[in-house]
Image (tube, rainbow, N blue to C red; front, side, top):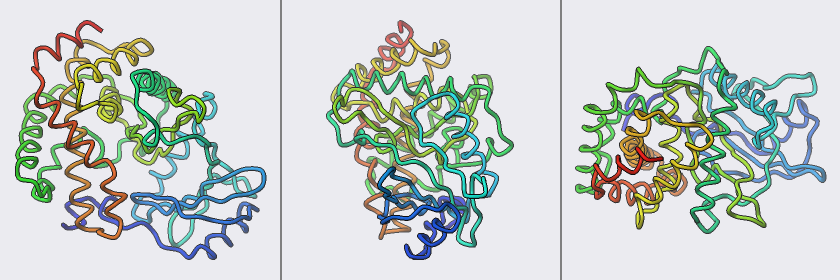
Length: 336
């Protein structure tokens, strides 16, 4: 699998820097000192820094990420902070900068949000509905936000799904590979032609259970949202479909999909066309997860456990969606 196939960013390993060197940079530029521990990441180098008053996330951006894209993420976080949403707060350097360039990548410091990652909590309809409401609030908070880098090309963006074709051979299971190919064919025929006429805006684009925090004493309540590294400007319904895909229960796919959609629709109403596209876009997200993680895990076997963390759920969800009666799904979504 070549870098060109995955794209320069997804085809690049996370940056490398000794913890002692990174600690020295953080102390120099931010005046922060404390023990560091590694955090998992697909593309960046992330560490937790503990001080007696506050925990912080030290982020060293992948050097393959253009500086304007990192700035896009930074500006969006500042925008959401002003809106009062539960997202990490950006810490400015001692000289007031939002980010510090280094030869290994752009350095940023964020507050560490406390909470229980959703993937470690029991799932429930109430939790899925609260996440749907949070997703709608985030989308509303990002309405009107713009940035010159918002239209950059990222393979995780569902409007880029056509470029998944070269990744399909990396899917080892022949039956799953065939289902992925059929899902991509439906994307070409039914989804891609409709995208230009939809509502577009900057969105989070990755509300997976590793990026969502629940209240420790109330796991049905969403307490925070992390990781804005996949933000793009894309059709709004793509963001809805991504979040819904991760909340889909393979044992009750129709019920879980409509539960999520109904709660989102109550906060930020979806058009009839958006609702009709939701199931196929959710399937497209599952296909994207399966194809990209298969390719990246083969390329970076030392990071495969992290890369493949959502693979099993995406596989189960794609199979479950494929088994639904299409007309029944569309009828339920029409009645939100």
